[in-house]
Image (cartoon, rainbow, N blue to C red; front, top):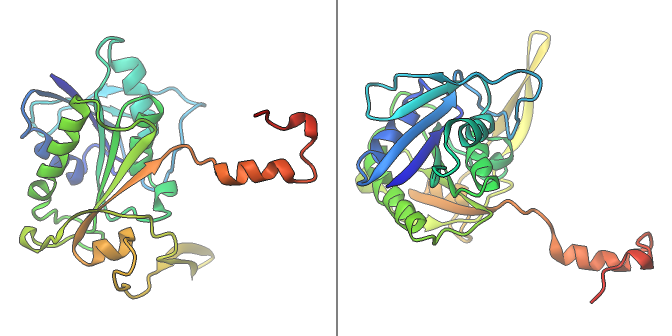
Length: 266
């Protein structure tokens, strides 16, 4: 029996997390647990709560056959609290899915996204994590055929988790195009598109709101998540949580302020 934990950053009442649960409930031999924020926590990054108490509350989740709790915290809080408070030591979750987010999480969005932080926190705790986002920001009540789109994907991830084939220290960032099922061109690996939008601030009254400007979609010269998504592909990026630049680390041995006594041996 595979224990699957679900979270999101749009809140436990969001439609996207219901769609994700519906997709996972089509799998055999699984137990589904949901631990999600009481309210929307988009854009909170990997924030965790230190200065107030977390209070998990049991939650009826659309009448579906799952166990669910709402937490007064962020997505990373939800995974951390679920792991330490709601699961017995010998019954930890085998796999974490985070989403389905309203709108995409592409490129450098992975650093701001609460959806991605849910999957990342799982990996920090030694559990494989998958973040899913859907390109329906301007059509937020419409999740189309997303359940059917992700069924083969979630099935493959669960099978690999059962076999121990998912690497440690990596979470998977999945972005799904908002198109009919028969127009999805495929499920493909993708690199992060780090420069596909420009930040700007728009003034409204005395305040300023952060906005983004997006360029035209580029030809598929490189396998970048933004361009692949906009061309009708489901884009999947493996994101390593160890951000150390090891090639630069070695070069630093020659920097003037690095003392010889501090150099690594070998």
